[in-house]
Length: 277
Image (cartoon, rainbow, N blue to C red; front, side):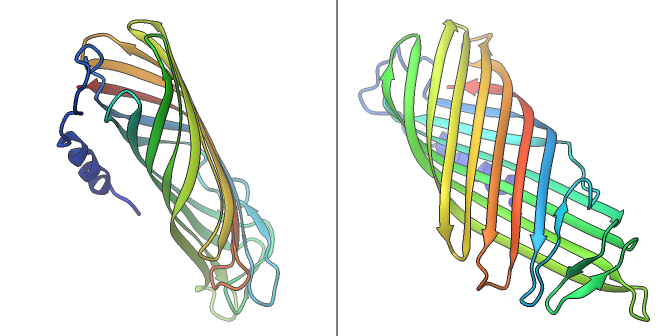
């Protein structure tokens, strides 16, 4: 999984970038580099996962109801935005959500390849970890003192690890059947952003990213939406917060060893302190 160390290095490199050539000093009044340091309260994380062996179609499991995973958490979130000029900018974002579950299952399931039967009432341990590192580019095709409209694209580098370990009673009640899968892939996204200055110190920002992929034996789609309100209480310092929702649908090709299907929806509230330079 990605760590804070992986996220801090790109932010440090951004801070070393030279100022844009022929910049308008009035415009660059604290708007060239912005760092956001905050938290993301995940109020609702819902997932379904399905493991298929080569010989048996698996059972679809709900991460919360069937596997006992946590559906809420509070995690760190880091973001940086750098403007080369009024028109072009890049954005970095990182966060890591880890979910774990332990329960006695209410249905018989087949996991592993070759498949083994985990009976009703057996203990099942599971995990679903998702780390997201985003590198995006924005083109501001309209920008004045009140409104900014931008479109762009980039990469969502997603590191997903999921697994299920179940107790199998075959003369040895401690025997374990396992099925674990992982995928790390740069996923191309397209997006758009609207920013509006309610007052010189108060702004709201709406943004959306989406992708549809078929690469490396995996197919899926992803939609990420943000709606934030920001208050600048000094020249270089402010606070912000808002709503964030993303949904992921990912499935592995029948020809791969990691044969699973995953749907994942995360809804939450983010709050952050931002610095402008």
